[in-house]
Length: 509
Image 1: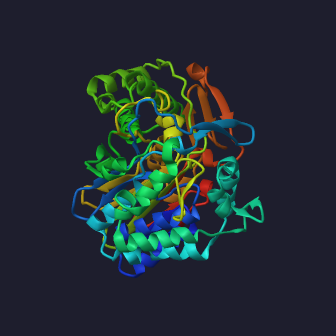
Image 2: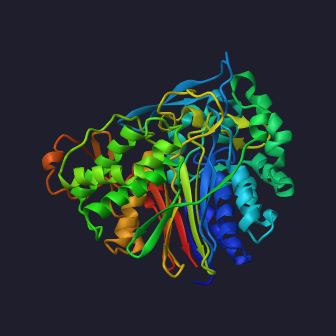
């Protein structure tokens, strides 16, 4: 390769990464530039006021997981706040989300991305931000996939005058072919290019955020002051003389992927599988999640999933065809998330997943920064909304991942959008590529299945020999490949592939 392999959620983000690589930037510069560009080109999926995680591999060193997911602010006694339900119609099914100023969690993206750049980047921050500034100021034509997501979120985007200002044209919601502009965000990027994250967490922008939320929100200036990026040792799993790395606890997604792989390894040492076995492994993983991980505030409960006794119990259950109960769980049907995967010519690799939820319907005045609604996400709050006391890092399903061989070469960099489907999407693409030996494009484009409660969702051409003892499952067949099944963006040393389900864009250069 001359520059690198790039896979992102939009053409604009991929070209931003390419521009940075051509300037002499590395995979970390390029991926950070792509993520920040996607805050305009995929405006409803991520934001500087969202949260995320970055798995970084600097050739010759151990991988590092930068955790900059959102924090839940402390719940103050006798506090009332703005928090209410809104409906999204997916066409055939409806789902409720919670928005308002009381749904805003403490943002992590800006501090996390700038922290990673300070540790790993080689270009000045101003250069890394330049493509994102240009597109925010000059505008981006709304693609078919982004137009669809915008239309789904119409009720949320009509919440405040600030969102209407940028999402409406001639009194109507923008749609495919319209140009989306966010000049305030371009000015905001100019500011942080000069001063870093200080204005947001310690200065003028932070105070403006707290003032704007007021008594309707939960965030105080001291909550912003105390926000930290955590550098974690990635979770790992040995597979076919290679190492799989992913997001560790308190990430739920990474832990469940490794649990799934450990079960498969115990059931079949060479990892071979068919769809029936895949379904049984999904049932076992779902059962274990809700049997042993009852408290999302307990990292110990999450870690115990990977203990020998629990793994042996569930692998034996799968081998004996013992069907386990599945607990009901309300999933986020949209999964407003985006992912960037990049390998550069030096062998460095970056895997970043970020999200803004569905947004709360508000923008920090004068900044173009759209606020998250993470405190209103059902799948992040399984014990109920605002059901905690102290400030905490929220659990997440995002799972930026990599496979590295014994020679220290990156075999695969991968991640996905899609809420609770992130783990099933990554697992299936990885196994298609590594076990079934498909090329990367075949692995990403292959039809997927996903189990949610007792509902089995399948894309076209999924073959299931016979449900047999799985007969209690309800099968939901999709007519086409669908964004419900995630949005996997993946690169190897020779291929770069973005998921057609979410209109992604890849560059091999």
